[in-house]
Image 1 (spheres, helix red, strand yellow):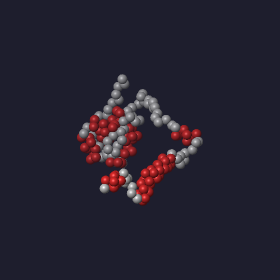
Image 2 (cartoon, rainbow, N blue to C red):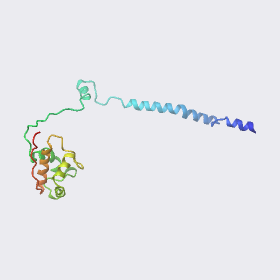
Image 3 (spheres, rainbow, N blue to C red):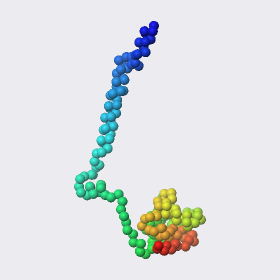
Image 4 (cartoon, rainbow, N blue to C red):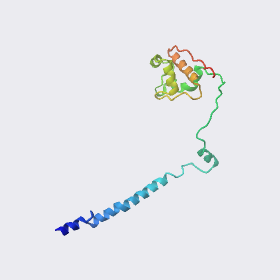
Length: 168
């Protein structure tokens, strides 16, 4: 009895040829197939894109600089609110695109005007909802403020147009 028990202790979990075949499949063949699939996946992502070539223009477009430096004329005449509105704000506020309050719509602007000029200016400079930040673009912050005053006053607000800050 102890001899039979001793033999069973040394046998493995694989008892039939079918179990051996499944174990070999899972242990060797399946990992190899997974590796082949991963290699095919990785190498297929590195194929050249359609329209790419080795033409000098195409190469220059692919290796262009990530950023650039723009020099602004700080001595240019400051723009008034109407000019900034027409150039920057009218694209959305003239027609009310993406939920923007329409220019001159007292009902849409009333609650916004009640929050005050500083809140309106902060929303314009930093963005709010679907409106992107307007600060740091083609206009100085005080010029964006002039556009805010122009739009708010057209809808019944009584804000004074901001002056150009003194140069430091």
